[in-house]
View (cartoon, rainbow, N blue to C red):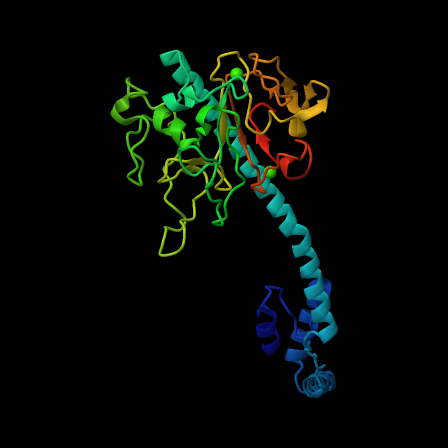
Length: 341
Ligand SMILES: [Ca+2]
Ligand SMILES: [Ca+2]
């Protein structure tokens, strides 16, 4: 009876166990043996069985040693994790940068599209009168660069996302030295009379967008990532229109936009017009840039590299830098993102 009861027990894993730990044919054999032994309790065979059972009960059980990791094993695991992290983290950083570059390209398409839509509506480009009046033979188009505010100087410049001044990029050789950043375009294209910081825009009274259309609705309004405080400047937030009206890229730097204000079908940008940046071979430049013909008698500069477009946009790229003495394909200019590339 005891054996039958044991046969009906299940182990923790669901395997049926016999008294002797047998299964299948062995179990049936054990069944018969146990049945016979049970009916013949007290016989010699039964005594033998009882002796065996006693021996099994009293036999020492094997000791299972539980040991932890050794120091060497732990150090090996830590080293492997370190190697894996060293391989994975750079890959994550690269994919993050690629995603931001893709966002930047999409943003630049949106800006170009907004300018074209404005031009189709009003038969002119979205520029303030002082910007139009500033063009000359040596500076026939207008670049909205890194200048902090509208005026007659390229300094002070806007700050990057870490609160550092950006490289000065603005128009040289124009009349009166008039400069501005892309907030001028934002005000006109979004039909803004006032920016979030309270500044009155060039579009006050809707004078540059009388139909009150929003041509640039693909961007969010961003607050500063850190507001200005006593003795410290505000830190701009990435990708969107800030309280100062400046449209910034995913690295919190302003999009640089050049408009073809002399309407010759070519954009002469403040940086990319430079021979030191764009010349590849003779009048041939990098990324489709070509040295254009002089636009007037006073246009004697060799810095006439241009893009065939009515508007171009570019970003300083992940490093937030550009240099007027470095080729477009090298150094800090290499990662710049160009709408015409
Ligand atoms: Ca032009
Ligand atoms: Ca750069």
